[in-house]
Length: 156
Image 1 (cartoon, helix red, strand yellow):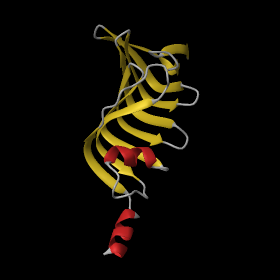
Image 2 (image 1 turned 90 degrees about the vertical axis):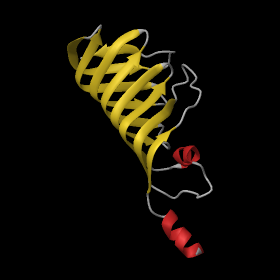
Image 3 (image 1 turned 180 degrees about the horizontal axis):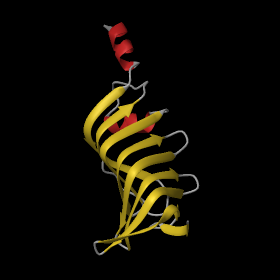
């Protein structure tokens, strides 16, 4: 029985429709996972750990798929897929929608976020949507998350 448990724990974990809510501290740059339809964790994991602890302990990439939501400060981010690397404190996500009550909605194809520097690069066909009207503004936007809400530092 113990051998079977060891074998099972060596395979990736797949989870469905998970939700986590935690207090987010504006300006600290940490990203807080809210929900996704599916989560893939490459082991090893401890069977005694709850889901949120497994996410934190995962040393390899954690892959999130389907209606992924998370926050950085007071900025809310939705995407189709995301990869969190806890060792590097980084997040890469695709099909992005960024909302913050202080700014119009930003949409892009991909975001790469580094928690250490609190900086992100939004890439792809970037649109700003204000009052239901969308306008394409470029291919790259640099974002600073070291404040309560994000700040655009440069765009091209």
